Length: 131
Image 1 (cartoon, rainbow, N blue to C red):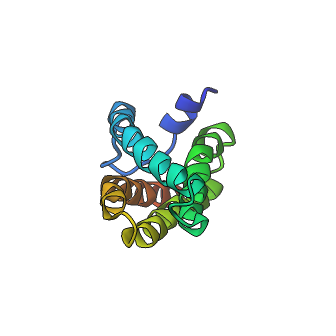
Image 2 (cartoon, helix red, strand yellow):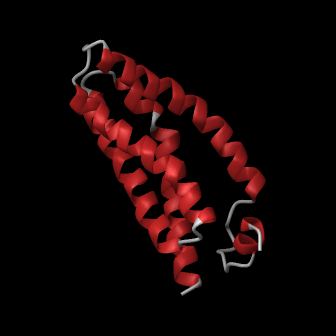
């Protein structure tokens, strides 16, 4: 069974976005992520930001990148939920630690935070509905 057949076979809330909508949202978010994360990492490499500021960005990036293999490769809904909670929590952490240095970077995370909040509720709902 393909990952799409597996995912389509899961019980999901009626408000679940279509795969096309999810793809469009990420097409909007990824440039924001690339720009802001890249800025933070470059500033940390140049020693214009402490590395402690870059840590939540690095954790978030890794957690974001491994979500799809966990969810659709391993098909492990509970582990994917843990992962998305890490993504969600690190966005808050990122916004807090970067605020005093570069407020624009923190504010640029708002759409990412809103989407991941919705996706987290969706993930937890899917787990609940398929228990």
